[in-house]
Amino acid sequence: MAVTGEIKKTTVEFSDFGKHENEIVTIKGTVHNIRMMSDFAFVILRTARETVQCVYSEDFSSYRMPPELKEECAVKVTGKVVAGETREGTKRYELQIHDVEILSHPAAISPVVITKKQVQCDLNTNLDYRPVTLRNPRERAIFKIQEGIQRGFREFLTSQNFTEVHTPKINYAGAEGGTNVFKLDYFGKQVFLAQSPQLYKQALVGVYERVFEIAPVFRAEHHDTSRHLNEYISMDFEMGFIDSFEDIMNMETGALKYIMNLLKTEYANEVSLLHADIPEITEIPVIKFMDAKQVIMKQFKYQPTDMKDFDPAEEEMLGKYAKKKFNSDFIFVTHYPSKKRPFYTMDDPEDPEYTLSFDLLFRGLEITSGGQRVHDYYEQVEKMKRLGMNPEQFETYLMLHKYGAPPHGGLGLGLERLTMHLLGFKNVREATMFPRDINRVTP
Ligand code: ATP
Ligand code: MG
Image 1 (tube, rainbow, N blue to C red):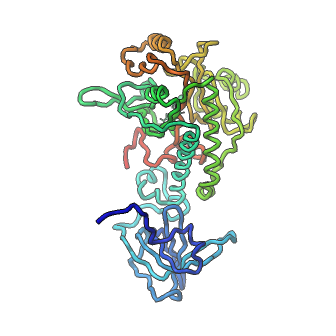
Image 2 (cartoon, rainbow, N blue to C red):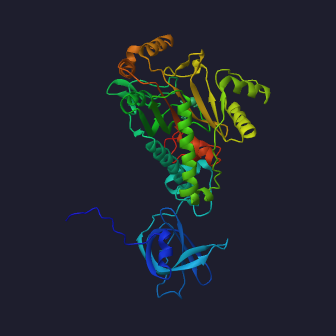
Image 3 (cartoon, protein in one colour):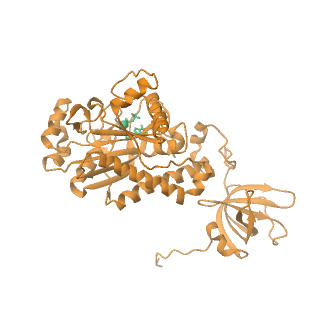
């Protein structure tokens, strides 16, 4: 026996029904729902991306629907493609059933109702039964949109001559500092799960100039919040030969424009199913950190508890401000205080209390942190020492600087957070297929 790699099609796709009007075709899928009427039945078939209405009637053929045909049976349905009408009056193809071949039977009926518009249970139960609840068309549309976001990010950056890379997730040091690093026993040696690809993507700027990575990162978040996961997908890029950190914000704006356009065109069904409000981006306003604090205090009459960072309420205020003042769903905040940014961040030469860094807020939620990095060896070693770090522990990281690095910078964009606010969710878990949080490691 040998295989050729030639992909044969023995069944048709719903999207090709138009080419087969009034012909007999076979389609495969899963029985999503059966609705018995007085003298006919609707058998709704769930295929990879669509649901297909099949109609059973004794008038159509000699085939008689057996009692063992149930929801979640995998089937091949043969029938005649006919043009019907939707409730809105648009053309929609359906299949008049001539035969059903049952390929597999479920052992039990679904513990949660997945055939209605929304999964009929609370979020926790939904997450407990993820392998089943994700089959609900609305639920799976969320992650199709998420695919579109990643795909847009990848396509846009590839078009800008970025190289896609994968960096190790088992690391010798934590890159982002703080207490939220997972420690791991590595054959008797302590190592860490990657909090970000920072140390490696910078090294690769010295190789490819522009790199990106879409991959999981790990944060041991000790609190149960609606915006933190313990494992999330970080969309990172890092670019060399920048003139200033504005180049990075510009690249991100270009990527976001591309992503939103891709969603509107190639994910239109999912966008409409989820009533997703896809933002129009022409330009994104930019405000300095301290000016943003002024806005919060003066316009929102709010007294921040921390003048070096924003709390979630302040981010929401800035979201409202961006919408009202600039009619923008996004706002860049720049020049964060040095004290709150990691060791690799470049300080502003004009005022070293602040940094050449930024966050991007989307509808009042931080989705990105980024900025220019230190590229000079002596400057980086000096900064590490100032922060009480031991440069010797970062010997391999510092090879980039020691042996020469171009001016560079980059960012990390949280995929689940972007999905969450794009779809108007209150909890990041809704935008996560199999979330890991302080209380959950299953399924
Ligand atoms: P926050 O202040 O909201 O906790 P952070 O500033 O610690 O976030 P960064 O280290 O800047 O996070 O990470 C870059 C991006 O990764 C964030 O802007 C966000 O989109 C995402 N992100 C960070 N931590 C998490 C998390 N625990 N769960 C989901 N996404 C996260
Ligand atoms: Mg951040």
